[in-house]
Length: 188
Image 1: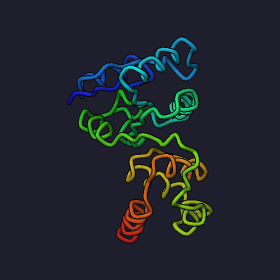
Image 2: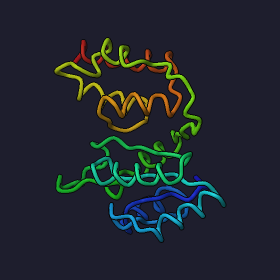
Image 3: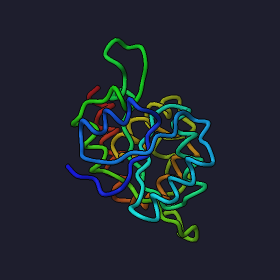
């Protein structure tokens, strides 16, 4: 699998995992204290070939994602569920621990956010409330699973609403994922 865009990862081990799974170039942020020089390299890469941000599903990974998104709106995003990034020994979490097929799958499901902020959200906060994704004891777990089903990563309630709009998730896609969530809970 060849990837045209340059993939932004956190470190050397992530680069190794990406190159093992696909044919791609990477830029490493070397942690969440992302430097001005690194941001300029990412901007340049975005202009020349496009960029896919593929960071760990943890706080530093989300922070890097947010910094890049703010600086370069329109970068693409790939997400992996937390449980697919846990080290074999259970100590540590990151893209570097993911299986090759999970990395390939995440890269197939890349999202490009809309830069146009005047888009009316199709899915409202009320929809999130009705779907028990906010304001409910199981909301956090439901959001985590929904993020996996829609390939948009783990979020809090506000971030979920923003990502659903940003990635133009349709009411139909949302409804299908929520139905699957409900089905899994009934069978669980």
